[in-house]
Image (cartoon, rainbow, N blue to C red; front, side):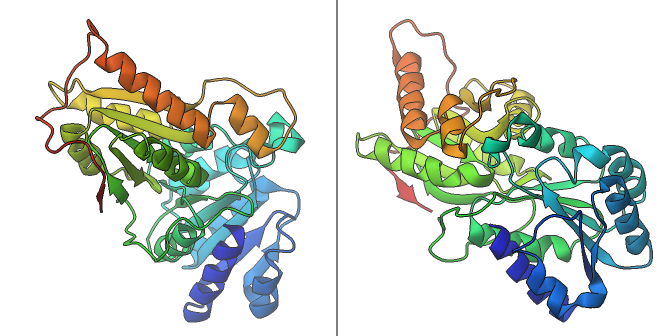
Length: 331
């Protein structure tokens, strides 16, 4: 994702001389091409994230479009007060980019796990929050947020994320991307969980379960209409995020469904269950501890469907009668 980001940003900067990139002494092997091509619009602020946010806000006040870049929690939590007061309050055109969302830097321990960032950024007034699902979405998201006014947060993976979209999908900030439809269960994922979700969906389809997949790259503003449409037709919605289940994607979906009178359909929120992981290990290992591998996602979906359909289960129904036999319909 980070290579897709810097490639797209270079294209944006070549067409718009207002675009700047600021880093906090991190990102090397990634940001050099931008620095070499636009030396007058690149600045390494050093290990001083509060200054990173403050300088970015100052540049934005002169009409610049400023991207800040660092890993995990550094460009967000370390300078949260400056983001709130200097960037959000003044509606400054600062785009905060965090690489290593979730547990991508798992081997460095919980201090480098970005697992509360979506909730915190989402709570800031005026902040748009975007977590693309693959490198294709990353390129589209970078171009999109550069053109939008005000602050934005772009949450990326680390490296090596697979390309899920064989061709660029329609991308609009605030809109979901539907990969497939199914009336038994629909996975709604954000960020780097898209590939495991697609794999889990394929496993379930081989068992005759009708599965839909929705990528939700924009966590704020949120595409409530897409969630309502799925809830009307689908028996079970499962949100998947490499993030605390509190305050992120699962919470956003819950808010939509709670606002719908008579909504009784099922919702299962998968993610990090409000805890820190003390274990040291790879991202794959830590995802497994959180139940976020493709196999675990498929197993959870099967279990939840079986529980809902068991005799005597007290569960609600979709808002409207489901149509079709539960087979997949490509979007």
